[in-house]
Image (cartoon, rainbow, N blue to C red; front, side):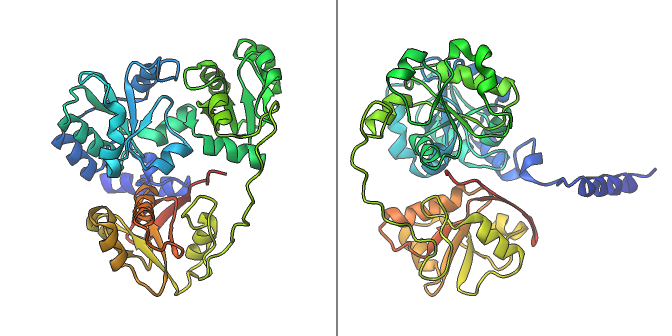
Length: 394
C-alpha cells in the first residue's frame, strides 16, 4: 500500500468518525506562530502532571509555583486553573503588581487558551524581562486542564448558578458550620464525610457542580472537587472565595436577611439593530448567531470583524468577515476602522482576543450598544470553519 493511499484512508476515517485533523482539540504542540514566541523568549514547556503537582491542595498557600492565567479577566473569572492569578497580556502593567512581593527566582507557570494561544508566551516573555528567572509555560493550558480536572470560578459564576438554579452548590465545611450559615440552596457534603455521602451527588456525571468552603485558604472544597473528578464527574468547579467573599459581597445567606434587592432592570433581549444579546456582558447570543451563520442568513446590517493577525485571517475565516487586527490598535484607531452603519460582531479563534477588543472600546467610553463579541472556538481552513460556541457564565 503506497503512502498517498494510507494518507487518504486516514483522512477519510477521521471524517467518518467526526473528528478533525486540524482542530484545536487535536493540537498537541504549539502552532508555528506560538513556537516562534516560545523560542524568542527561551521558554520551557511543562505538562499537566507537572502543573497538577505544583498546585498541591489547590490553594495559593499550598501551591509550590505561582500560576498565571494570561487570558482576559472575563475568561479568567468564568473558569481557571486552581490557585491562579490573572495577568492578561493586554493589561500586563496593571495586573503585574500582584507579583510585587514575589521573589524573582520563584517558579511561575503561565498558561492561556491552548496550544494556539499566544498570550501565555507573551506574558512569560514580559515576566522574564521584568527579572523573573524561573518562568515556564503550560501551553496546553485551560482547554486540557478542564478535560482532566476541575476549575476555579469567581463569585459571578457562583452567584449566577445560585440565582438561576443551573447547577448544584456544595458546602464542604463541617455540618455545624453549614447549619449556622450557608449559601441558600447549597447541600452539605463535608470533606471528611465525602465517601459516605457520595450517593447525594447527581446520577448525571455531566451535571454542573460548584464546591465552596471557608475562603481562599480553605482546601476542603478542593478535596471534594478532586474526589468528584476521580469518580468521573465532568463539570466540577470550586468557588474558592467561598462564604467570606459571598458575605462580603452583601449576598443573602440562610442566616442573614439579604440586602434590599436592587431594582431589577429587565435586560433587553435584542439590540436596537436586531442583534440577540448574549448572557455575558458584551457578547452576542452565541447559539443564535451561529445558527444564522450556519444557515447563511446573517443579516446585511451585521458585520463580522475577525480581530486576528492578517496571516491567521489569510489561512481561513468566517464567510463575510473583514480583518482588523485589534491587538495592534488603540481603542480610537479600532473604533474608527469599524463600519458605522452596521452592528459589529468581533471574532477570533477562541474568544479571548474578541473580548479584549470589545473591552478596549468599552473602557475608552465608546458606544458599544451595537458592538458585540462572539465567544466561540473557531478553526477555519479557507471558508471551511468548525465552530464550537462557548457556554455563557449562566
